[in-house]
Length: 125
Length: 244
Image (cartoon, rainbow over all chains, first blue to last red; front, side):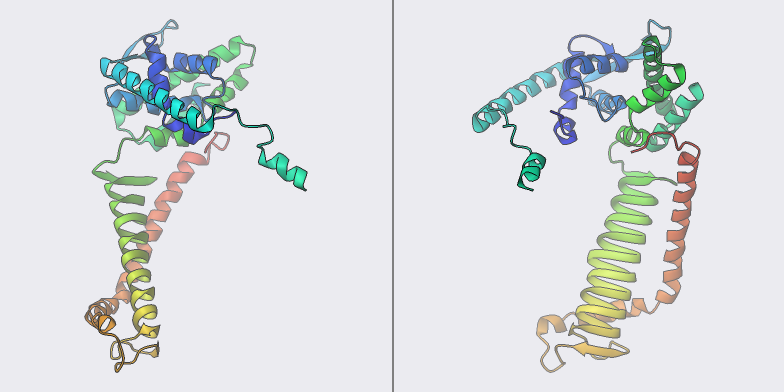
């Protein structure tokens, strides 16, 4: 199922922190990692991760440095800071709690196939 | 190929509106991403020209990325193109606590078309106070006004005064033309009557509209021209670029 932009907006920072917790990386590689684990996540554009990365850096959750990549071009590498690790840890806890609450309320059941307004409408017509 | 990428990046940076060194860093970083993407697509068998366009398509709308790259709400944002956002915002389109522009939105707004708690402009919508050629709001004063308290050439509201005044209470003596008033001086409630001094003050200001209105309309036209010029510069030669 396609995730809505609204669902993603608040969680992209956590996702990027999680990717960077595995080690320093750069924009293109981060996109590759995200696409490999969650295809379609960056449907609105790969470039949309940069504003999030820059925001994280402004908040000292990650740090960046320029160095030459394997192709010789200067490349901006990001790495997570101790503050970022702490934030990621907090976000993981928040997410686990939210997941538990949602699971309890929704009963951990997947939405039935019939829960598709267009199908129902077509049937009714 | 670089020229196409550079034009795409130009557009991102127009919307991002960052100062020189930061803009260059963004350009360098995004360009590295795009070039890497193009290289990978070519390696996977995509022709070079198509690879470039595909890399741009996958990278996303320059407008969306550019706007997201903008800094947080600054104290002062003055710009000659796009939307100014800040505590004090001045631009063709302005959004802020104090906003001035062709189109202004905020708490205190001033411009050709403005919307806020207190609005002064050619077309003014104000929750508490609107003063303009066309004013609509709590206390509205202007050539044409609609409001709880309205003063103008044509006015409609709860308490009104004007060339043609339609309302619950039209203070006799302040209007200059036809009156349709629910209350008369004999039975007007004290609360409505107490608003007469406000109407008197604003009615005097309204007398200057003949001079002020053209100034507001010129403001609107000037900002509209800046918007048009910028839009043409950014978009006209790059119709093929994706934009959100």
